[in-house]
Length: 271
Image: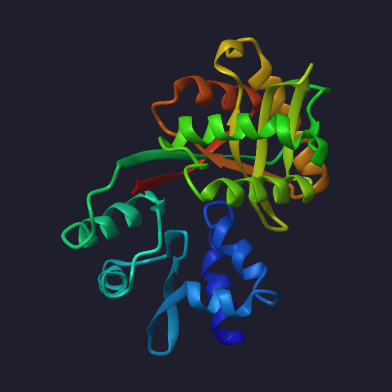
């Protein structure tokens, strides 16, 4: 995309910087990754004005799409070799786009049609766990099994199948090096972990929240998330967000107790 195109897409995304955190983070990095961004974001124009866009990378993410633009984007996606493992974003846009793609794409593993997007922009309501801290590289071997367990439990497939093990290990290592992994580790056991998935100067989106099954219900999640909110707001961005499956009542109760409030609703189609 040209510089002017990037600016127009950024303006679209800034209509909702919380829900559009991922695309804004990609645009924020566009000066470094211009070629990559150019090949990941396609736009829909009306009278030479960009009205909507779509991100097509590891995920497909619609941005301010309309019924008309979704038809055009669906045709583009059908004509392009699929590389995405999911379609995610605003619920209505995602589900309508999927209905257009359904006759042409393979059957998804799962459709999560109601995922509340939560946000907090103030201090947590609970006292932060003082033992939750940014992870360091010496924690990598301890954290990896916890990260794999969380991913497998959440997504339904292991991230370390076959040749992807080294790729996943390197990704976790990179998150740690950027000080975006938070954990409580007691006697070589991870009792809580979470990470910053994407970040802008306004919003950080948290992902990978996990407590070992045998320790759930013992306040590790509540105090741990309070610590993550506190640390993230101090060192990264004033707002902290995440999205959660509507049926995960325990997690939703944890986030509510920390002070998260509902902002919008996502949907995800998983392949």
